[in-house]
Structures are given as C-alpha cells and as structure tokens.
Image (cartoon, rainbow, N blue to C red; front, side, top):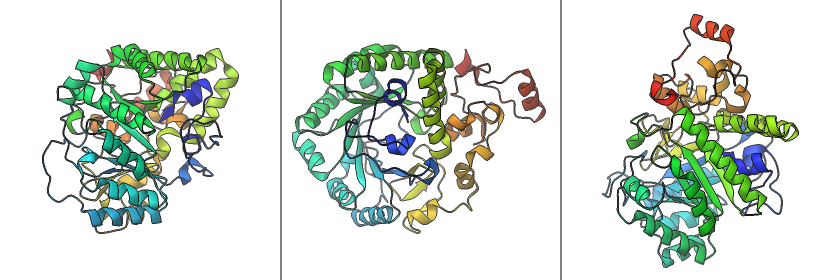
Length: 423
C-alpha cells in the first residue's frame, strides 16, 4: 500500500508502523495502531483468508472466480478456529476475512470473535450488500477493526462491474448501517478503464458520504481479471489517475478533511509521488524517499508481508496466486509453510532484489519499489522476475539510458512492454 495522505500530505494512520516504521501518534487516523518492527523485513504477514468461495455477486475482476453456489471441501468451523490459533502462534498482526463473500459463511462471527480473542486484528473485506442493521451490529460486536466495502464506480458502472443490478444501492446501505453503529468502514475500488475517468466524481462521492478511508487498487491479472490487458489502464491513464488522486487528496488535507487515501498493488506509485515532491518540495521529498526505502516496496509485500490462505487451506504468496500453493494448513502449520524457503518461488519472494530482471534490475529507484507485483510479471512474461508491466515510469525517469538498454539486450533481459499498455 502507498499511503498518499502520509507521504504526499504528511498525515498519519494506524498502518504507519507496518508500512514506514514510524509511530502513528495519538492523532492518527483510525484505531489500534500496529506495533513497530525494527525493519520491514521482520514483519509477520498480514494474512488474507479467502474464507469461502461462495459469493452473491459475479464481479468482472474476481480473483477467486466465485459464484453464488456452494463449493465442497471448504474449511470447517473447527478447521477455521484451528487456523486462527496457528496464525496467533505465528504472531501475525492482522487477519483479513475475505472471499468470495465472507458474510455468506454462517459461522463468520464465531471465527471473527476468536481472532479478536487471540489478539489478531480482524478486518473484513466485503461487497457490503449483505450488511443490514443487525449484521452491522454483529460486525461491530465481533471486534472487526475495519470494514472495507468494494465499489467499482458510480451507480450503473458499479452494477455492471459487479454483475448485479442494485448492487451499488445495497452496498451504500451497508456503508450507512456500519456508520450508524460506529463501525470504521471504507471504500475499496479497483482502477480499470471502466471507472478511472470518473475519479473526480468518486472523490466527490467520498466527501459527500463522509467516507474516511479509500483504497484504490491497481488491477492484478488473476481469476476473472486474468484477461491481462483488456480492462487495465494504459501507462498514460495510470499517470492521469495518480495525478487526480494526488490532487484530490491534497485538497482534502488542505481543507482539514479526515480522509485516509491509499493506492494498492503498484509500488511505482510511491516513486511517482516522490518525483512530484522532489520537484516541488525537495525537503519533503527526501523524507518520503527515506520512508519508501524503509518499506522497500515489493521487497516486503508478496511472500513476506502479505499472505493468502484459501477456502481449502492452501497457502499462496498472495490472493492473486491462486494457481500456486506452498502447502496446506490442514497438513502443516502456517508458520512452518511460510518460513520454508525450499520452494524456489518462496525463496525468490523472500529475496526479490537478488532475482529481478530487466528494467526493474537496473532502475535507479529499485530500493523504493523492488519490482512491485511479481504475479503480473509472471502472467505477462511467464517469468516471476521479469519487469512489472504496470510500471508506468519512463526510461528517463528511472535512469535507463542507452548504455543500460544495451546491457539488457546483451543479457537477454530487454523485455518488451505490452503495446496495449504503452499506446
């Protein structure tokens, strides 16, 4: 995650200790700040548990390819409780209950209660359409520290994206029901060609509805979102989207609005933000460089600071690698699986900087990004160490001159960026 408010505007949030090694402070956004670690590499992973594949919607970009039907073989209540015990023993900081739609599990609140009792911060990722007033109270009482509700555009855009008419209005009622009981709740949105031009309307909506946290995700090619570039932003569009996000976040801060804005799944955003500040506010730029370098970008994300356990108990590098498993928690403890570098992909993910190829290897800002999302490189080039095709920074910006390009050609690492993204 790139915390736009923290980096670009000097704000604070509960995730500062995890992302930047700084104390959140008493006036930080949110509640229950994370504990600090000595370095980003020492972090235990935030675990995304795809607790069920079943979902009441049919989203275009669903990484689990979920539908509204029962799937056999999913983890039972007792297995779920055992998993939570296992994760607590490994001292993970947070467990994100995801899906499918996690609220379709009839035992979901028992599982959430147990995570909270084990001192794991429980977070809920949901489409929001099932949150009626009683469910909102149940979420609050179970100890959920944050509810992320997915919207993917305004009314009709969202409904087409979600595959169900009325999904937007029902999700909005979910927002309202959470807010009514004092539950911390925010917006999650995946940037695509369908919605990026509507970003100003979305920011207007965030302000009008009093939403105090919004995460803008870059598309990751997986599941029903695996059709590579058909819905993805071009590099030009990604830069325009970032310009809007930076501008509107700055405006929120200048007017004293308490809104935590983040971008997710593309660490090039951090470098782009830094370059903007280096031109306009060099002193602030130097501070931001230091914070981004502490974080390390992709160095400490997939395979280190983020993990996924699916509905069958398989452990994946993150939620977008559903086709690659390191093992199953029904057979081995999560901590044992997660620290076993005998698997070549796990070893590579734990030491990404040593394996990067192409322009990522020679980038002057490698320590800020460390190759971003390896799964996008794998989907595009069939090589997990190739460049991330969503890096929209120019060769000039990353210091890739003619001599370095010649070196890449000589070493067979001059990967061609997809034409669909560069036009």
